[in-house]
Amino acid sequence: MADDTPVAGLSGVHLDYPGRAPLGPLGLTIGPREIVAVVGASGAGKSTALRLLAGLEKPAAGSVVRPSGPVGFVFQSSTLMPWADARTNVALPLELSGVPSSEARRRADDSLAAVGLGDRTTARPRQLSGGMAMRVSLARALSVAPDLLLLDEPFAALDSITRRGLIEDLHKLWAARPVAMVFVTHDVEEAAYLAGRVVVLSAADGRTVADIPMTGALPRSEGWRRNPAYREAVETVADALARSMEPTS
Amino acid sequence: MRRLLDLLPALVLTAILMAVWEIACRLLHVPVYFLPPPSDVAHALIDNAPVLAGSALQTFWMAFKALIVAALIGGGLAIAVSLNRPAERAVAPLAITLQVTPVVAIAPLVLIWFGLDHADRAVTALAAAIAFFPIFSGVLTGLKSADPDLERLFDLHAASPLQRLWRLRLPSALPFALEGLRVAAGQSVVGAVVAEFVSGSGAVQGLAWRLLEAGNRLRTAELLAALVCLAILGLALNGATRLIEHRLLRDRV
Image 1 (cartoon, each protein chain N blue to C red):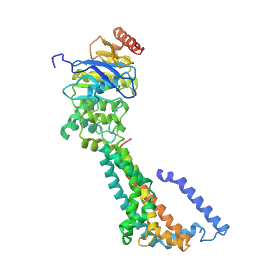
Image 2: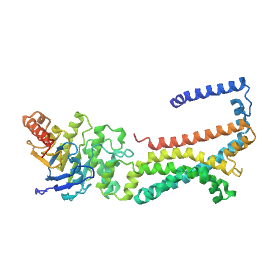
Image 3: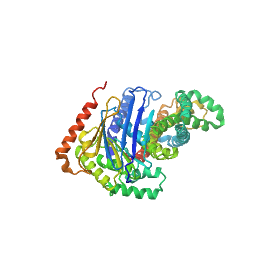
């Protein structure tokens, strides 16, 4: 882990969907222990980039570098199985990967404890609030000890207080085990606060139009939100995002 | 207690309709072969209770067997077909053909196949044919209703087709399958009665035979009593499937 070989990346990736404008070339490099936020207009290929990195989608052209180890994925909604309790939901990726059930459930409990839900292992999704369900979803993605964690606008449906709490927790989890992360969001402040680097995708074809390093060490503390350097970074990202939506010629 | 209160408006309406019916029959001197008052129907129900109960049991038993057969074949076929896209394209038009064919129309054929001396089997087969489609289409729709993101999660962790079926698609299909079962339960009674009408030999003495018999003799009160039994049978089956639904799905949303 000491070297800086990228964990994952896209280079020169093109995609062609019937009935949609083609995307590409997409380019993205994720270093070890790095938190990268991806912002862009809807349709700019943010979710597509995540699915490519996860191997859930195949490019028409170009190359995709994927981590050798497991990948964790957090979707826009918590996508828990409503018929199963939190522990079973979190143990699912482990069991699918062939980990024996008892071992998987033990690790699921650890993972739930890590997101602060050690006392809700037998709760059904309907008994959980939106924020708690998203924590279970996060625990599920982390249960496999991923080399790369992909998050697709995971907190978009939550209220801002819950969202901030989850971002703090994400930082704490990262500090305890610094996994490389790609976080897709449409929220500029969230991107600038969470990530060490913000990548802005063009609304027209998804190519990277800005790649902005964020100042200030990770994980952040709450006070960072009032820091002028942070406000400056937010404005820089917002400007880049506005430019990304201008038509290119 | 709350469930009883929920039923109250329906009970009150029934009582009002009964009262209007009773009074109208008496005031207008309606001939009893045309429309007997509810009190006559009640008498017929009590007087013929043993015969009606036996017939109801027979109709219920045939409908129940048909439902089991339809659930096994319909559910099994839906699962098999869901695993293979070409198979689905091959089977779906045939299943729809079966659904749109009036069961009465194939009844004489089924009677020939099962033999006139096994009319009960023919009735069960026809009722199963009618109950098949709601279960087949319910299970098939349900198997495809899994959350697309959950499907992606199963892709991400390279789940086997069996893991996907067992851990994702079957649980996702359960509410749809139970809905199909509830519709099929009603249909199986319809199928049993219609098939018994068509076989019409008295070899099967279910409620349909009681209807025919009473009708032929213009014993209208007995006819209505048999109809009441059929309604109770339908309600009981519907209630039983709702209970199963409630039990199996209460942990979900």
